[in-house]
Length: 333
Image (tube, rainbow, N blue to C red; front, side, top):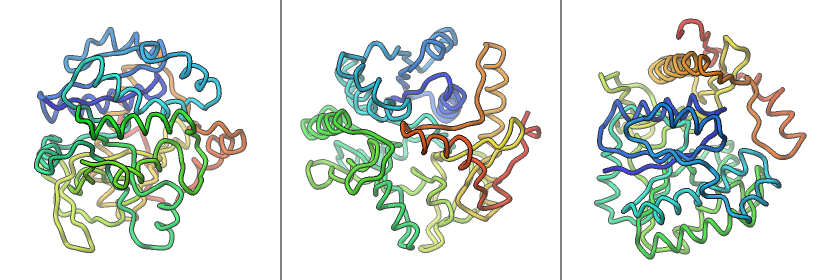
């Protein structure tokens, strides 16, 4: 059985439910530990009694040290701080053989078992996923800021190699985990660059279908759409691969009825093969949650720095690089 964990609060409840439903469509062979970071998300998810989930209230992982850090960091920064904590909790408290952290804004188009076959064949204890930036000037700049690896699909098992890496990462995040760009630090993410140097049993995920996201989507073109989802082609190598999961990061609402998906590509064909499926799912879930008293802000803020937070909530969401990135949401309701 594939064991995953994720964390979010009620503001990300629509994305978290979309993640769960996408997994449920792809496979029955999984368990998802969901750490709820507010009471509302915990109550709603507990009442939904989703078949393949274990619902955990944030208070179960919080000790005095974490509670102090919670006061010092933004909501998003605190969640980043807790990423290695929840992986550790699943491995320790539930004694799972392994656990893979997945971001709440992932969406699975195909059974992720293909990724776990790669992990098994590599005899990996820890798996990290590259951003897969290009060698362009802008991508080198992004890599320098955000790091080579993305905290989105991170596997740890019960081995000594894994525990050493996980404990080190947890300690580093407790020391410093902010939305600031420093030479060797940015949130919980740039710490992963040290893993291959410091620890044994670390494997970089190779399957291109795991880790497609706005920061690398321009490298691919659409080959065809199968019943399960898109099949893409890497432009540089002509290598064809099925899309396993997509990371729907950077989507920003311009209003209640319009969204800027910030896809990173100008190809409308590629966008239309990926984004409408997710947007339709999100709109349906938001409608359901609206009946339960859950509302969502169009502003997306994740920095504890007041100036950066203002820019995120009031300026950056209107930054449009491609007009075809704007979708009218009425069509998905």
